[in-house]
Image 1 (cartoon, rainbow, N blue to C red):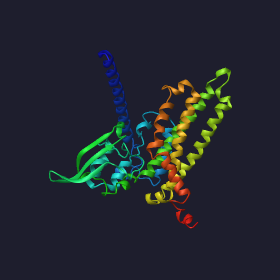
Image 2 (cartoon, one colour):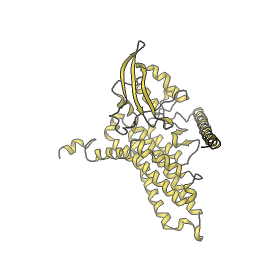
Image 3 (cartoon, rainbow, N blue to C red):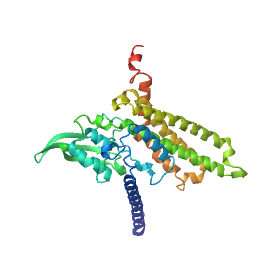
Image 4 (tube, one colour):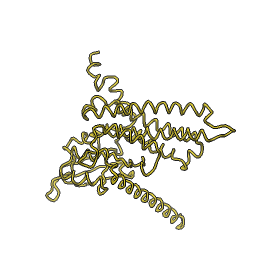
Length: 348
């Protein structure tokens, strides 16, 4: 490779990094404006500047559906969970399991941007099974301080990084929650997160459907609008029908979640949350794919947001609890291996 070619590649990479940083700066500015206006912390308890609403899950389902249905922008950037109405699962995790010192540092720090928190589950050899990890933390005393020595590898962290831990020492004060109860911490907000993410996928699907309908009414090859062709109409009819039915299930499930404890949600509603989540993510991918098909070449290009929506919602069929894991949860409740029907089916 010649020096000039190498220099050109480096320059292009630096330019792309600059664009990403500029976008992140804009997103942070949007967050600050949203926070100043009283929108960003809507879903949080009053003690952290939120509304403390008794129907937070229902409200958030409606809001995230609405924002995602308007497309991509500074108000809602689905690829990195940015929204002018924030979700903040880590705030509630630290409120529930953190020490006073951890709450003071990380709750406000995550809200004002001085602290960044990520969750590490996936490893090179493990993913969906959160009960079987190779990464280990062993008790250790380092320079008179009691703590833990960490060794292992985690994948798919922030910015898609792979993080390797080799004899990394952390003090005991760095442990979140009780030792050996990490899975409980990780699952503390899982149902709330999944129902809200389902609402976002539903909103994005609605956007793809609406934009396809509008385009089909204007685009007129062979002398008549695309919208007059049943080959265009029927696939969009099916998607629109599924979206309307799913919207009702999401809002009903969110409404029910607001009326019970997290423990009761896990025991009685976990299957409904899983239904909403896996079907919404699949529906969004189908709607984005159909939008690209209806729009033709321009729909596949980056002149339209559909390929972007497809890529980023396609990952939710893996990362938010894989589609298969969600369906297994539904099956467990359906066949009585878990959930309310377990005792009933055990007598058969």
